[in-house]
Amino acid sequence: MRFQYLGTAAAEGWPGVFCRCAVCEEARALGGRHIRTRSQAMINDDLLLDFPGDTYMHALHYGLDLAKIQYLFVTHCHIDHFYPQEFILRGDGFSSSVSNSPLSIFCSADTRDFFDTVAAPYISPSCAGLLQWHILEPYVPVQAGPYTVTPLPANHMHERPTAQPFLYQIENGSQSLLYCHDTGRFHEEVWTYLSTVKKPFSMISFDCTFGNCAKGQNNGHMGLGDVQVLRSRLQEMGLCTADTLCVLNHFSHNGISCLYHDLCAIAEPMGYLVSYDGMEFDL
Image (cartoon, rainbow, N blue to C red; front, side, top):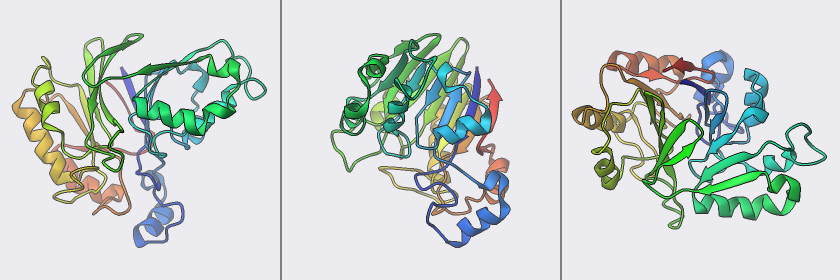
């Protein structure tokens, strides 16, 4: 299973779209791995995790063929993770040669409602018919081609009580991934579910929006202190071992020591990798 981070920033990107703070200016000057676009990841060449407005740039930069994507799993409907207006351009008059290629979209009912509000009225009937929606329920696994994906409730979006943001457990053959964005510390019922998982994860991608801080937003995002608590508990459960790839991801310029080289110096001795746009692994 090949995994690639396409975008590794929080909502405003880094440097922030309109920001002139010191760390945004430093990122602009340094370039390279200090430049972060909105959060998105890809598995092999057929599964996307989230669909932000930066997707088109990701496709150009990394030479991706978005027409090959068969499965899209959306974590939640915040705009840095889901920009459904882009699907308008998949329809007649905008795209050719994909007209018979369905795209399966897996998400919460709230995310589908968001699509219906902001994008559905503008999508051609022929295009709409090729968007195959699958509404997910917490803890109920779904099959997407060779992937078995289980949605787990994230600790996020408390401003919308009806929303259901998701973490994802993704299995492909002998490999497995726990994708933890966006979230604060896990709900206790998620730990109850994880206690039933039989084998360790090949990779865990941790939300670390606030960088090297003891505690982030318990109902939204995490810092390195939160990640340490989560990893310790996963280790105690046998789900995170010496062979598990532990990666910090989803960074904000509002975090502490979040510039790439600064956080690497802190996190790598602790056994974490720090993500950057374009980073990829063969699991």
